[in-house]
Each structure stands twice: as C-alpha cells, then as structure tokens.
Length: 512
Image: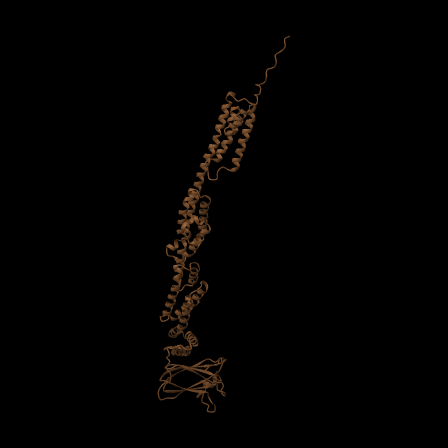
C-alpha cells in the first residue's frame, strides 16, 4: 500500500520577520487613521483608530481659547503610541495585503506623519485666533463696564473700575503681542477720562476722589503701558483741590482746610498751591468788611472760625513763610474787635442778654480800645433793659452828668448795685444798711408805708446828677442774696429833688 501524502497546512506559513515592514505599519498607525491596521486587514483596530481620532476631533473642534483638554490630548497620544507599537509587532511577522509594496508603505507612513503635524499647526493657529477673539471680547466687556460705571457716582462704581483695570493689566502684561493688547492704550485713555469726568464738568469737589484714585493706577498698570497717562491726574487733582477748597471757603464750608492741606502737602510747588494764601487773605478781608454790614455777629463768628481753621491749616501743611499764621492772627484780632459791632447789633435787635455778655467781654479784653467806655455803658443799659424793656429803645451814649440831683438810699441789709440808663448811663454800689431788715408783705400794704424814712437809721446813699428826661433804675442785690432785682422809671423835671429807695421784702422769694 503506497504511503499517504502529508496533511495540508491550516494556513500560509508565518512570514519571516521584517523590521522594515513593522516600521511601516507603526508609522502608518501614527497618522491616527489606522492605515497600518488597514494594510494588515485588521478592521477592528482600524475602526478603533478612526473612532479615537473622531472623538478627538469632536473634543477639539471648533478651536477655542482653552484648547484641547490635556487629559484628552494625553489619552490620544498614548492611544496612538500603543497603536504604533502594537501595529509594529503585528506587522513584524504578518504579510500585508500586497507585500511587494512594503517599501511604498514605509514611505507613505513617513509622509502621512505630516497629517497630525499639519493638523497640530492648523489647530494651533485656530486656537491662537480663538484666544485673540476671547481677549478682544474681554476687552470689550471691560470697556462696556467702564462706560456703564461712568453713569454712576464714583463711590458706587469704584469696584467696577478696579475690575476693568485688572482686565486691562492682564491683557497688556500677559498678552502683550495680542491684537487686544494693541487696543489697551485707547481703552486706558477712555478709562481715565471716564473716571475723571467730574473734573471736565467742573464738579471739583466730586472730582477729588476719582483723581486721587487715578494716581494709584500706576501701582496696577506698569508705567511703560501708561505713557503720558501716568501723570494725567496730577495737574487736574491740584486744580480740583484748590477749586473745591476755595468754593467751600467762600461759602462757609468746613472741609476747605482738608482740601487746601492735601494740596499743599501733595503739590506744594504747583500753581494751584500758590493761590491758597491769597484765597485765605481774601476770605479774611471779606469777613472784616462784613463786620460793618447787616450781620456783624455772623461776621465775627466767621472771623473767629477763620482764625482757628487757618491756624490748623498752617500747623498741618507747614507755613514756612508765616503767611498763613499772619492771616490767622489778623482774623483773630478782627474778630475780637468786631465784637463791639456785634454787641451793638444785638442791643438794637432787642437781644439784651447777649448784648450784655458781648459788651462785658469786649470791655474786659480791650482795656485801651476807643470803644471800651461805650461798650461798658451798653452793657449796663442792656442789663437794665432785661428788667425794663423800654430802657433799650435807644442806644446809650457816653454822656454823663446833668442838672437834677437824685439820691439813692439803701434800706436793705444787702449790698446792692444800682444800674441806670436814659439820657446818661452808669452804675454804682451801695453797702447794706447795718440796722435794716427785710420788710414783711404786711408792712408794705400799711397805709403810709415809707421805706428809707427812719431818721434813726443811717442809710447808705449816693447822690448823682442826671439830665431832664426819663431814667430807668434797677436795684440789683449782690453776694448770695436770692432777692429779685427791683426797678423804677423816673421822669425827671427841672426844679425838683429826687430820692430812690431800695428795700427788700420777706416772702417765699424776696425782692426789691
């Protein structure tokens, strides 16, 4: 029996190892299209390569400023590397569909590497454009925020101004070569004019804080990005501080010292600072002139206030040449001497209590002033008029003496001061009567009651000479007496001798 033939092999024998073929398959897989697997007719891993590339494209496109997520990019790179290694090992012993074209496959693999490289470059360009658009969008939103903030007060908009400034800084510093960075200088110019708009509207007090803020912008934006804007607020702030302070000084405001102080401290050599002392001098002269006007007391208070505040300004801002101190001194002196005119005005307005205090203080502070004597007279008349208002109808003069003798006696145990005013004004003091006592109310209603009429008593007395006319008397107890001042209105005529008698009565409250 003839021998049987050997069995047929199950498939073609494995191809001998071919490194060039393996490299070609690996390079084709690196293209991301799975062409190496397709050449080996391994369709499942070929489809897996297509799917991975499709997922990457879905994640990456359209290109935006954030780019491809790093995790997705790293995962895709690992997948391509694994496909290349796996494809290389598979192609090492597996014949491709057309083995005679393996050199061509190697060349094609090398050429196809340009696909991911070119895609990367294209994507980077697209991403750069997306970044540009994103930066331009940020810049536009910051510009819109500034424009909207300009329609509000600086206090309420300050936070939004700072937010916009941070955007400008980030674009200018961290994206210096971008198209948006090229637009930042224009945005900053608009920013400055918007923040400082109150100055352009001549709202100087409202402009001070925004301009102070703008001087801090170089702390955020480097000066090389600001250019001339770095010094833009300086002259404007100096002018605003002066105009705001001058306006408040002229209208009696209280914040002008702060404004002028800031000006002299911050811009001591500016033209605005040179105007401070003349403005203060003018305010003092205006108040001095007002002492002779309709409201002398208000002018006096103004001068006294100027004295204090100018002194504060000189102390806080420095006064090397002493001009502020001189202005303060003049205001103080004018305020002191102006109190005489104030007292006269108070008297004529019927405010006798205030007039008395003003004139007494004036007389005490100005021993040698030409109006001191009359001030003392007005103080006496004002005190009399507080008890007898009719006594204050006329302003007293410095006249003295007269043709009629009036004797004033004290039938009271208390020392008394006798005040009188009329054609002449004056006062004197009488000692208490040693043997006298206060009368009871019953004594005063007895018919024929006559105080100062006991010949056995020695009544302290004084005789004065007064002219014809009406004289108003007030008898005021001294010391700790609680007696109420008594009064009398005497109409004096020629040919008579007059006597005034002061006495006290016993009651819940005693008086004259």
